[in-house]
Image (cartoon, rainbow, N blue to C red; front, side, top):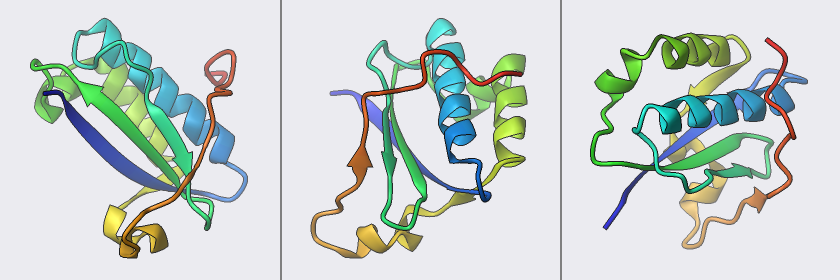
Length: 114
């Protein structure tokens, strides 16, 4: 059985696409480091415009291990400049028996410009 992490972000106004791009860059960096599986992350949007991402971890994953990767740490810092982390319990959808989010498989073709 695999382990997944689900994290929510409240993008600053006009920054939703950048948040998604950075999340995909984080995925790619952590996948190269062997901390995330090759399964693409689920990137979802709440009714209020919050971004929710689900990543499947490898057995080698730990938050501490991921912070030791400079690229990941830098990307996370960049992400915090365009969004704030949001507890999943604060999402309106989380109070429902079935949490429904808008999903897309149309990820940006390339990561956001650095």
